[in-house]
Amino acid sequence: MMTGIVRVETPTYIILTYGCQMNERDSEIIAGLLEESGYHEASSLEEADLVVLNTCGVRHTAENKVFGKLGQIKVIKSKNPRMKVALGGCMAQLPEVRGRLRKLGVDLIFGTHNIHELPSLLEKSGTKGTLVGVWDKPGEVVENLPDRRAPGVSSFVNIMYGCNNYCSYCIVPYVRGNERSRASEDILAEIRRLVEEGVREVTLLGQNVNSYGRGLAEEIDFADLLTMVNRIDGLYRIRFMTSHPRDITPKLINAVGSLERVCEHVHAPVQAGSNKILQLMNRGYSAEQYIELTEAMRAGIPGVAITSDFIVGFPGEEEEDFAQTMEVVKKVEFDAAFTFIYSQRTGTKAFTMENQLSRTVKTERLIRLNEVQYKLALEKNRRLESKVVEVLVEGPSKTNPAKMTGRTRCNRLVMFEAPSSEVGKLIHVHIDEAKTFNLLGSVPEGNNLQ
Ligand code: SAH
Ligand code: SF4
Ligand code: F3S
Image (cartoon, rainbow, N blue to C red; front, side, top):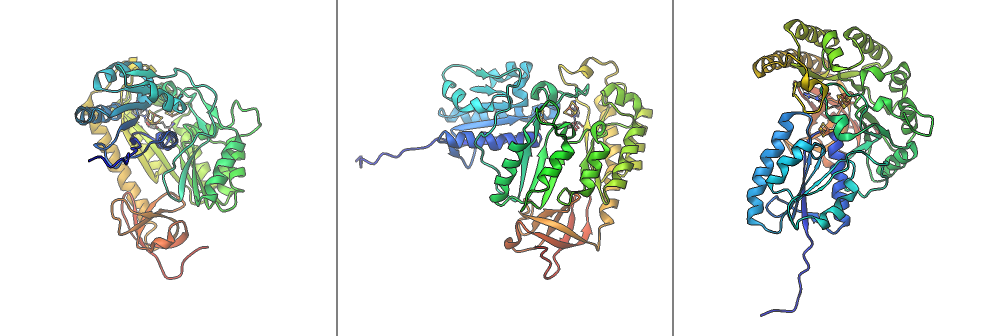
């Protein structure tokens, strides 16, 4: 018999995030917008009324992951007629991808420039076919959107959007639009708010943070912004990424070296070591200039960790060019690096370049590069064995929840045992053993730094 009690069900959502920190940050805004519209988070795909895929299209492999997932979701959706699928992020900005998505049961495609429109687009979607709500170009920077940040002591803060560099292999300028900086007062207000909520470390995000300020009414550059953020009380650490080598100025090196809250880590992707390839990539520096830059950073920022991205197998890369990349790797001794196989992206300048290399050659070079880079990274990590380092305790490790994790100022991941009361604190950790991608440590008695 009916009891007369009406159960009001709020719709549920799940967000699957692919790609870089930009997307991670955007997913926090998507979650905020959805919660403000009355959704709450589902614990699994099967239970979700709404699945949002926040996608990346930087390489084919990234795209393939999303298409694979969409196939799986289509099966779940066939058993759950209430389910809606929305796809946003960088793949949504690519017209040729949108064509394929229509066939895969996607109800809504929304772009990177109009995330704020998601709630209204969702209302309109789901009646017939795929609704496409994508802006081709960015509008004004939209401030004060709701968000639901990943809980923790460390947060991402966008300082700029888009990219003007047009590296010849890269789709980011096409999918993220032209470079736009946020006003410094908005950035500072956001960081102050985060600190009040318990955040102790921020990573300032942009495709090219060191061109921050261009086009703003205020007279400001990235070094000035770092100086302002450095004054925020209660904030322990400031990180930033990514830095384009061409735009790292002596002023910036000086700021990173002298501002006490700014961590000694610069992610400055070199991409390749051959001047011929660097030119074809439109990177705007030579291998020699890059090496000089790293020397200037090491001199101006004591203990700096320099990390990089590499692309192997760019069109026209000959064995000799690749050997030059290996030379740079050995000479600079990067603390860590992300290494990628060149992926031919529609719409980019390199797409039509001659001498595209075979998968076999590209894979073989990647293996060789990784072998050398990983060995060097391990050697560098070993230099920290038996040393005591400052770590900001972030929380239990995802891979081993019995241990805590945190990072050194130079961005090395450390695993150690500590009570959960230490989360959010700066502590001293003794490094017992170095691995290629992390450090194992232990906490000596009474080593709280605050
Ligand atoms: N703005 C940042 C990040 C861009 S994307 C920067 O310039 O460093 C992150 C990395 O992906 C790039 O540094 C590059 O190494 C890699 N990448 C970009 N396009 C690629 C492509 N078509 N194939 C392979 N790797 C690519
Ligand atoms: Fe892509 Fe180059 Fe811009 Fe980085 S700087 S996002 S690699 S175009
Ligand atoms: Fe991917 Fe877009 Fe980031 S293409 S790397 S998610 S800016």
